[in-house]
Amino acid sequence: MKPLDYYKVPPFIDRAALTKEVIDIKLSVEGKFQLVAVEQSIDKNTILPDEIIKNITFDDFEEAYEYIRKQGFSARFDDSVGELVFGPVIEKRYDSSDEKLSSEELQARFESEPVFQNRGNSLGGIMQYTKRVEGAYQCFDTTEPDYWLTSIEDDYRDFIECHLAEYDKNPDDFMTAYEFLNNHPTFWTRLIKDRSKYNRKDYISWHTHEGISTLYASPIPKEITSKEYDWCMEGGAHVERDDHEIPAYTTCYHDWKLDSWGASYEEACINFAKNVRKHLPLDGSPRESTKEDKEFFNRLLNK
Image (cartoon, rainbow, N blue to C red; front, top):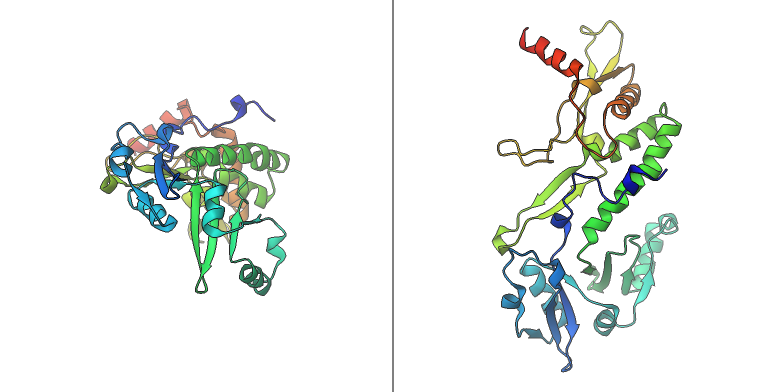
């Protein structure tokens, strides 16, 4: 499958908005923890990190880490700092084998491994050091500036190579239709995290696996339908412009061309997916207006 301009990210994604602002925690020659800005990750409108971190060192790693987070930045540190702070790291991957462990077996594993490193994320953008403190777990993330961007690239590739490919092979299967809709970029919506209290740009992240939650499905009352039992489903692409006080990409349209019906929820979902595949671009771009759209809205206005 390839083309679709060989993936990367859908065209509506603002790549610059997905860059995380990161401060490094490094070990100074005096053995203290020193803060250094990762310059390429800092937005030009942000208060210069040097004004916040200049000449600041910490004797304690956790104090340095918390200071960075309180200033509204993400922290990054390498394995040498991690091992110095937490001791020898036991590398652990979370894969399908972990799912086969009972809760007691997982607990026993954690009890015997009070410090471990999670490198299970295939994106390679975030690692997590975890330590057990009085029976609870405390996590310290080390994050790359392009973590969210890499995550979006990964989700887009998965949609094309997995969910779309499976759907096109079997469009009449409920689960493939469900996953096709749930991961389709046309239903991706933004989460905007306000960081004005830090005088920083807002953090933008995307809901990329929640397409079904943007759709409306309902049984149709018997007095409306001639059938004993019927379902309808409706929804539409994300709204690509700011609308009054509603920011772009935080809600979705109702697109009449996608409306579907079925004798069950599953059948309505399958039929809705077929309409999406027929009418909507795969990369989440808005669909072109058609003659039928104009006729439909004229009928509504002239009622």
